[in-house]
Amino acid sequence: MKRRRRRKIIRGPKRLSESLDHYLYPDEPQLQARRNPPKKEPACPHPTEVLRQKKEKEKKKKKVVLLFDESQHLTSKGDGWHFRSIRWWLRSPGKPDGLNVVCVFAGTTTRLANYYAEPKPSNSSRSANITYLGGKKLYPPFYQITTTGLVSLTDGSEFGNAGELCKNTNEKITEFDVAAQYGRPLFGRMHLKRKLEPALGQILFRMRGGGRELSLQKYYSLLAVRLQMGQVSFDFASELVALGYAHLTHFTPEHTAVAEIAFLPDPVCAWLAMTQMIKGCNLFEDVDGISMGCGEHASVWSEKAIKIYSSALCRPAKGDVGEVAAAFYMLACGDELRRKQSTDLKQLSVPLEKWIEELQGRASDGKGTVHVESAGASVSFIQVCRNHLRHSLKEINDSALLKHWYRGGRASYGYASCPAYDMVVPLQYTFNERLHYCPMLVSVKNRLSYSTKQRQAAIEAMEGIFRDAKLETGVCMLLLIGLETTKKAFSTFQFSHDNVSTLEIEVPNEDKFGATNLAWCSTCGGGEEAEVMVSHADLALGADSKFACLLRSKTKDNDPSKKLLNEITEGYSISRLSDETSSAETVATYAKQS
Image 1: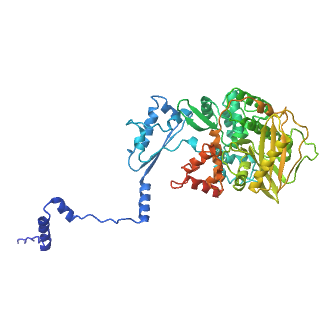
Image 2 (image 1 turned 180 degrees about the horizontal axis):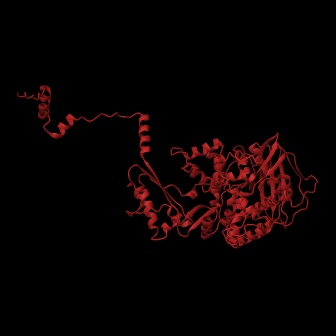
Image 3 (image 1 turned 120 degrees about the vertical axis):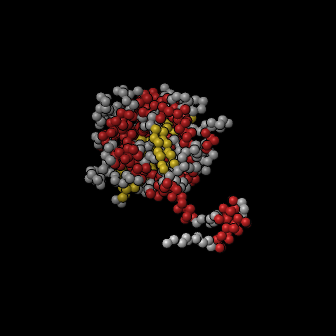
């Protein structure tokens, strides 16, 4: 039986439409456009849809981090051809799509910094500026960013106040434990993980530059940690950055290479340097067969400082020698007391009354010339750092800077050409069973003679600073060093809450620490602008003050503090919280957290 074939039936309308298409659109492109019309997209997608698409795109991107250690070798041959090739590839837009590349170059010499500076404009086709049109730039070198002291604001809460018990170990917290969180984040994290104590000898060995004997350069490395002595030569700066704990703050390769350094606020390094300035101090085991103990008397260190200045190994700024000598004297007096009250030197604070008696160059005579009513009044600084931020005294007091400095074991020099004082020392005292902090303003005068009217005018200028800030508690100290003749009488001093006390200190001509001879030594001038980086960590405690308010109206355009704040407003940030967070918002965030 034959099967009947089923014919394919073509419906009339479809066949008719195809015939009409061929008739109306004889050209093939028009025919395809007719059959496959483009999809209509909305003119403006919803913002939430844009954000969703952006997040999806970010998730698909691959993140690659390239780490180059000892990368100075990339610059050693062929005018840095290897380093320039890598940098060219990072800047070029020809990388695979969806690839985020971060490249970190770490080295032990300042030679690498030469290639971070942007080259001058060039007409050559090989110029890297051609690939900069899209706004792609390298992150700044690490020496332009510092996070010093930020561990105390983030994960340093394990260490509360000195004398309390640690949350994890139930051991008594020392003042050194607290101060370690206010320096380098590396040391702060090591201390939280109980890895700092075993490494202190090795850290000191690096600060000393190795070797059995200390040269002038090694003496400078330890002195500058506590005193901020000044700038040194390019080669010496490179050595201090590579082998010590100096911080590179400025580099220029044009004409004559110049490298400027600073020693950032670091209580660990300052404490280690202090152990070397106390005679007979021996707290560490030998490192590689080299003894790290038996510190020398402070008078030996002042003699070395004089040789460092007179030999032009170090170039201080104009007027800084007197301040450095005064700071050295104040630190040495505190070191004497620390050695007597604790053999391990873990207690940084010293009673205010005994410290002032040491400054006056005499033992306590029990006659009441120094009287402190507020219980527990003390000072705790073991280093003095530059601070170019022009905070008013009220801003310093309101923004918790005094507490930050006290717990971190530091005092601060005043900004350049400050008219009333040269140093700010934080004081801690107890009132109504609560801890309070107040400032001690120190005006240093390095002169052969100073009249009674001049002394009165200097003290009144500091008292005016307190009145303008509407602060009722503090100390105004006039410290005279280098006087040709000193009087034997001691001025009376009384400190109490809600009272601004005044005090005159005349450093004896032949003081046992040799500070007067240091103040008289001859020097070669230099600059301190590089040390402006030292005050970066204080931005985290700027409170609610606007950055513009930190500058006074008379600030010059070339003033280091104004340059610093301009860098901040143009994009510098202490810690990048997110890609969208500006530098000012970042600092404000840390201020609110503090």
